[in-house]
Image (cartoon, rainbow, N blue to C red):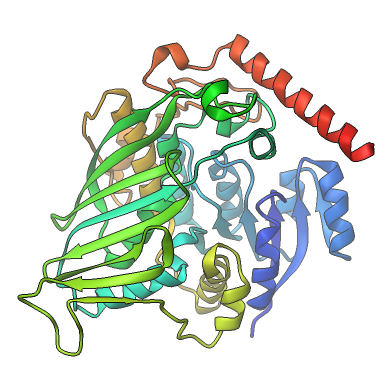
Length: 424
């Protein structure tokens, strides 16, 4: 097996990739992060690995074959482009691009590069989603007509908020929920092989307050989610919700075909239910079939131990296999930037209460030029660049200097109390 020498940029989420990359025959040789304390800790954990605070020095590390890009959510593209320009393979965390212009630039860089580019979207590789793909691809459901995907991950409590959103300029404080759409949409595309071509979105808003949040570190943005309707290339329709903050935690998916349907069960998401109309039940099956799928793979023990229902193992496996085979994966630069574009355009649609947008085909230069100069963003850049478009359709809840300062004071008070408790 060819040894792939890789580096990790962004040691928060990025560190989670190290073990799974190693399980797939890769060797960690360099790490990079702006947090020097974290960098020192990880360098001690990985003896012999070179540490950098400067990405340009990191990407020039001798012998680097591949890099995991896992810095701030909306700032992956510029660093991925630098790697691709050096023909270094890229495994990029969600989302591939924070703006339409960056998506265009990323596609152009990938087309010029000899390297592999892959989106590290892990939810399609969860056991139940792989089972739904197997069933759908067998043809037993007929042709997909309608599908649903929901990533519901509400955040409650000061501790969880302080860990995920350390200050008021952090991307999570300003990010429209619909921007985090890949966990909801990618599994549907993976299961069916179908991509959206036109979308519209409606916001779901309910302001956070100290009373309904149960703490001081409540989100300023009122958006709890957005319902995104996707009209697809084959005439089917998807309905998806991005990072939803309502009800209980769930990752649920439903595929409705012309013959039958399959879904993982809300509240028991590891279990799938395969159902048919009683007028057409395939031989060997019942009208309703409910079961827990099993891994049917050689590496099932490694998958079971990996995070996100085994998904973290498979993203690394597919990436490493693609490098060794010299072919682009399913979740290539076109797949990734299309999902980014859907998220960005869905927010534009939600700001206009459902105005539809055509999804660009990034294979086509005529579609790229329409968006190549659009770098509008609702989030702060890590370099201090302020937002250029609203983060919510409710103007009175757009974060202000006053509300941001209040959040920062509450964050500082939380950590001061926490540190005092730990030292006491």
